[in-house]
Every structure is written in C-alpha cells, then in structure tokens.
Image (cartoon, rainbow, N blue to C red; front, side, top):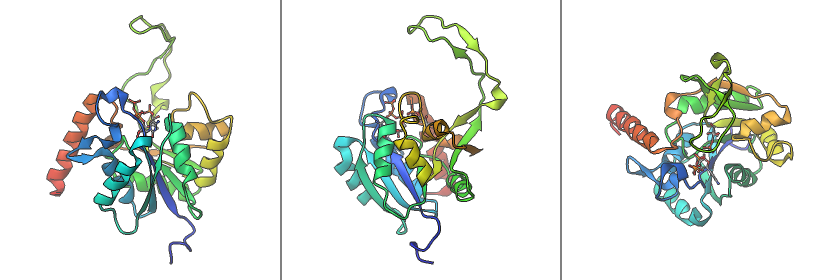
Length: 248
Ligand SMILES: Nc1ccn([C@@H]2O[C@H](COP(=O)(O)OP(=O)(O)OP(=O)(O)O)[C@@H](O)[C@H]2O)c(=O)n1
Ligand SMILES: C[C@](O)(CO)[C@H](O)COP(=O)(O)O
C-alpha cells in the first residue's frame, strides 16, 4: 500500500529550541553532544527508529535552524523518513505549536518528543503510536514514582516551605515523551484559549484542559529527560552500555 493510501500516517514533532539553562552554560541543549553526537540527532534517530514514523519535524533554536538543517543532512536517517526544520519560539508550548503548523496534509497521528529525551527506546515509541491508532486521542508514556511527593506552599528560595498535602503516590505517574495524539485533538488544544497558557507543562495537560481523555502506557527508565548536569552523566553511561552491548 502506498504511503498516501495508508489510513494512519505518523509524524514526530521534536521541540529542540530550548537553551538548557538548568544544564549550565554552553551551546543550546539539543546541540550538546552525547557520545560525540548531538543530543538532537539521538532524539531524531529514536523517532525514525519506529517504522510508523514517516516524517520528523525538528523545531530548532530560532538562530540555529540552518545549523540544525546541516546536522540532519550529515547524519543519515532511514530512507523512509523525511524531515523538516522550523524555527522555534520562546516557550516549549510555542515551539510545539510552530512544529504542528508545519505538518503537511495527510498526517493523522502526531508524536511530540523532547530533544532532551535522546535515549527513548523504540518499543516505547511504538507503544504510544499503537495506542493512538487504537483510538485514544492522547497517550503519554509514564512511570510510577520512587519518591514520595509533597504539595507545598511556595516560599522565597531557601525558606522552609509549608507542606499542604501528600498525594497518594500509588496514583501518581511521572510523564515522559513521546506523547502521542490524534492530530485533530492536538491542533484543537494548541488553538484553544482554555488550553494554551501558563501551567500546562506538556501537550497532554493541554488536551486535559479541553476535557478530552488522556491515557497512560508504560514509559521507560531510559526515556529520562536530560535536564541537569547529572542527567548528562547518566545519559553518557546508558549510551556507553548500549554501544558495548550492540557493538555500534
Ligand atoms: N522555547 C523552547 C523551550 C524548550 N523547548 C524544548 O522543549 C524540550 C523540553 O524542555 P526542557 O528540557 O525544559 O529544555 P530547556 O527549555 O532547554 O531547559 P531549561 O528549562 O533548563 O532551559 C527540550 O527539548 C527543549 O529544547 C523548545 O523547543 N522551545
Ligand atoms: C513534556 C515533559 O517532558 C513531560 O514530562 C515535561 O513536562 C517538560 O518540562 P520542561 O520543564 O519543559 O522540561
């Protein structure tokens, strides 16, 4: 069956326009290397590893779009995967919206994946795609928590913060990416005044604000987000172990 005739066509939007302030000084986070290769390239390869994904839209730092385009040209992707590069915005939410706006007709399922989660395994990507194709409008991979979580009354930095509540840990999940969406639902969320704005730290949260259902599938420990310097140490270790095991 030709690509056009397929009932589902899946694209991945990769927001990669962040600075990486929490990681410390240096190049924009997505362009910092992991095992000698830019983190963004790992993330793009992780999406392209799924046979479902026919298009990857990379949302680049606004001034870095030509550099990102060159990087993608240098690092071969599977032949079945096309890519586009668009400049990003001030916030993750804005960058994702710009990526969605670049999607061509014919795409029915959209994954939104942080460039900062370079090591997500393909099985996790496929599980998300499958759940959307099975009819869920929004799907997030997530893991149970290891720590107990407290809700606090925020105070100035360094001041003790009063605890307001301890949510039941067994009911909580730490959410990862790629998050998968039926395209129409994701577009509606990004166009809705109710859903857009402060406080929604992921696209699934915006879909929740529309009142649409979001479901969880199992995430993976190696899909963690590289946010702080210690995460980079862990990512290097995971990559080194994979390379030793796979001989690549
Ligand atoms: N204006 C922005 C901000 C973030 N992102 C992307 O959103 C993902 C998750 O964001 P995060 O890990 O918070 O990255 P940064 O915003 O770069 O990190 P920091 O908050 O430490 O600056 C990253 O892949 C990041 O590049 C983006 O595309 N555009
Ligand atoms: C989308 C996300 O990775 C889900 O856990 C997370 O909310 C991104 O948060 P960030 O502060 O923009 O890194």
